[in-house]
Length: 565
Image 1 (cartoon, one colour):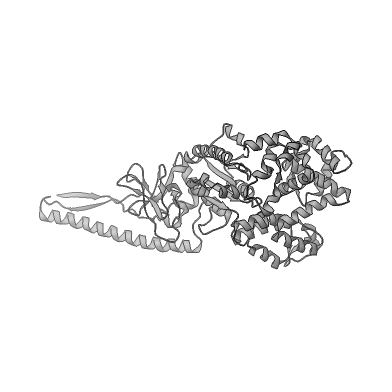
Image 2: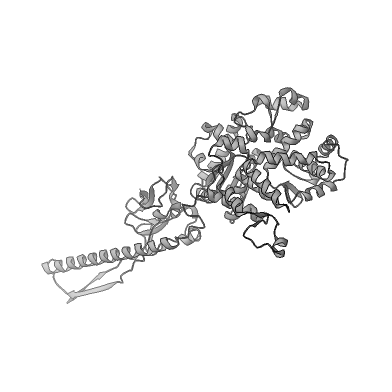
């Protein structure tokens, strides 16, 4: 008589419990988003990570917060997510959510292609179950299977480690188009911050490229998600689709009082609760450096420490910015072969390699005060203005570009003022067109033109009144340098130009302030006695500081609004 003893091998496609599903391959790092959408009703709850035995698996669960220097894992005994100490060179250095485990190389689950032993029968002669022989056979079989299983797992683990290390050393694994952790460029750091925290603060002085970076993130990275721009406090009152990327741009400005800043921040905190905490979307917030530095106590929460500071650019950042503007303006470098074809397709201006490298290496002497007082605008705006001075006169370009790098505000103001002082009537009309654009806040359609403002300006500048057509011609003449046009909407190519031109035209004719929008005046005009002390040097040349009596001469509105603030 014989009896059959059936043993089953481990099947890695089944779950150890209803939540955690073991897999027999590595986690799908190259197709994380697609896999998350396929396996979880809410893709943001998708996890693929190891359990406490080092076995990879996936589950759909609410993420937990993981401290820096630790990695998430699934505890099969407690049936919940837990954390363990991270080992390796690419461990997380900040708090992150467990569902973003794939962004940290040292925390990635390194699954092995485990082999599954097929079911088999061991047939022996029947012996009494309580006999020593029967017990010995059973114990021997179990011990043998256990030893074989341990040997197989150890061998597979060794082979897996070798294979994984080879892959990582050659090319690394795809990270959903997210740059590697050692990529220190502002754009890459902003991407990682939005991946892990869903909230990032982009800060910098005027002209540092805050809005430009936010637009780049929206246009290049959030291709499948819509960006909602909020540039007016009233937009917070509108019923919003929270499952979006919100860009909160230009809500803070340098002349705001502390109470105004706190009120604005309260609106942002409410939006944060609905969007980030409830995992409905992401938020990009731009804030001028002066507000963050002036009111440190207002922005104490941890989320406001997740900062991309454009006042402290890396060398790679500066190189990217300079390359962008040279290509945008179709400039040649001194290694390019200049022939008739290249002249027809590019500017005739050549930027020498020595100048290119000097601009990249340029350092603002490492102090924020120096940046505010001596430069007055960010690196991005200075390089943009430098590269826009395309001219057939190479010596003139070399001289102007070098000066723009060192003292951009001085040379911008000089160039704008020269337009008013020239006897050339065409240049004078261009100055009036640019002034109208600045006095309208830096953007407008001809159909929205304040004709009373235009008439007053032309009268003050002693220029003969023309039909609207002269404005179109004047803007077209300035397209290569200062003006950008899109579907009939005119704006400044470099927004910071508006601020300095606004100051220049108001210095010439203070009475024009009476025609300006009140919100624009709140941002650019202030009582001398209330002017913030941290706005100084060249930075202050983008604001209008007036005495109380002078404001009363212009409009009764100034006294009420500014005294209240």
